[in-house]
Image (cartoon, rainbow, N blue to C red; front, side, top):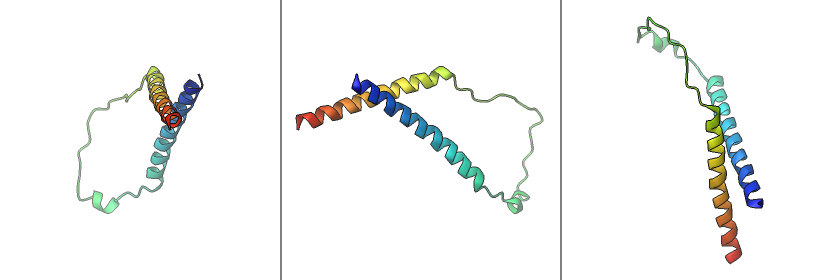
Length: 88
């Protein structure tokens, strides 16, 4: 039971680090963005005449699957590490 709790905590930590890393990287890209106004005048792109609404929507249950999957992987790693330490 202790391995299951440790695996869930490891999965939660991995998910939080991933989320904070993604947000932090986006923040840094926004913070240090410098548009190239001079170079943009040389290349002209035509805009679309139609507008599309929507985006990529990740279903909430997908996060549950990744959490459980990461907990299983973490649990196997923790179990194997504990087993290899006790054999020595």
